[in-house]
Image 1 (cartoon, rainbow, N blue to C red):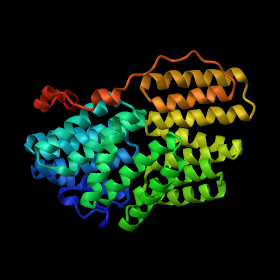
Image 2 (cartoon, rainbow, N blue to C red; image 1 turned 120 degrees about the horizontal axis):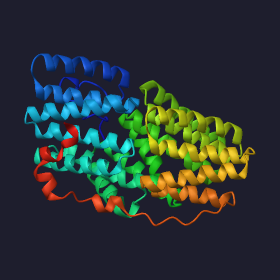
Image 3 (spheres, one colour; image 1 turned 30 degrees about the vertical axis):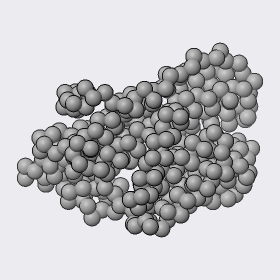
Length: 374
């Protein structure tokens, strides 16, 4: 049913690259091809190669370089009047914006990417952009707004036999079930994702699925050795492919597993490592989650009550401002766990649902709307 996983973001002269190629290798080859395209005056090819440069930088945690690369790719695509390439560049920029916690910008760029993908006749970039919108809403905790979109994208991916996108959708839906207490359903979905990713040779998707399975095995079954074993397997893939963000989340999850097992000193060390990794790549969501785990571990290891209260209150304010609803609820639970009182926060809005439809006036003039690219 599913063929081998492919990497449609590797385009132009880079189509021979594998979805499992080391990101360091991808960056080196894409940079070389980009320079060749620029020297020979081929803006369309420069846009395609620049996309791979941007994505390699983003996944390696090089935020500044990734930001410059996707904007340069967009400008080259605009010069070449290549609408689909413009859409891909916007997709990369929107994905980076989400990674950096700039959610309103992520919604704007991904919405534009979806529209331009449709206009340019590229069903893949349109699907990736809609998936990006769905993931942005899921990360913000707005499950009601994006749950149906996840299911729709899963159905489309299954129908077309796209293994990589099927795995992505399964993992996203599984995470929502896990976060709302549906552990059995989440486990089944993560398990299916791991199976499909394995058969399709999608090592990145397989590593994320293993991380999800480890979480469920730990929280539902209390099987710490098995959870750590799954995370070790996933970590080997992250290191082989230089997946900086996935590795940091793996370390954070290892901290979660050890925390649940009452191994607070070990958990503290993992949270400190993950926090350092997230800060190095400017990933605020991961940083906040690592800070939360670290604060809880330190509390169990004897940190004074006032220090714990101050740390959690500061974290709550940070998450309130960023719009991460699920993570904010996790802080509230931690405050209750340690008997700390906090004034009830004002209910957060639903930025996801408000942004799911991009205004036609914005889409009609994509160049004018893209002041950020200049």
